[in-house]
Image (cartoon, rainbow, N blue to C red; front, top):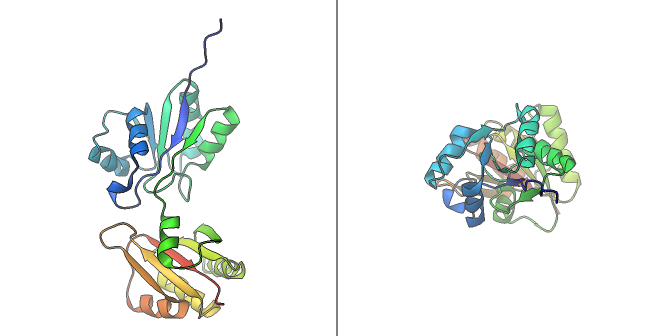
Length: 230
């Protein structure tokens, strides 16, 4: 009788976007049972793991600069029978964070992949914005170059759906100014530091928010949402 192959797997575990209490019980169970944990930043994730007394599990770095190189190692570990948990600094691994290449490689290698539900800034900001939720478009981080950023904003307005983007606090004022040029009356929202102590949600037209943030420098993690005017 042939021995059964090792039953390894790769599990994508969402982590809190701010408040450490937002991790799920299932997420904690997975992290405690994992043979190794792949982290976007091992020092950052170490704070979360220490908070929940998850210690002694090997941590490996999995970030944008090494994902292609690290992926074969993690796939091989799962094929050998290990449970590999994957976490990013905040939210769902793979959503504007490392993880896509690993998930694809696991599927191609026949390695079981499990994705746990949990915290994500996208739906959190979407509901808080008060903008239509039945159809939305998430565009990740807006381009750094001004021409490409303007084009991305214009394309998003043209869809007729609520647009959701991540943006840098250093660029949000300029981005809002461009959005106001494209559609001054567009209903918009800037959700900042979601679930954290200093969370703020700013709502208004693109023109109103552009004026507000031109006078007030922004700090922290930012989600920008807007919808074409009716």
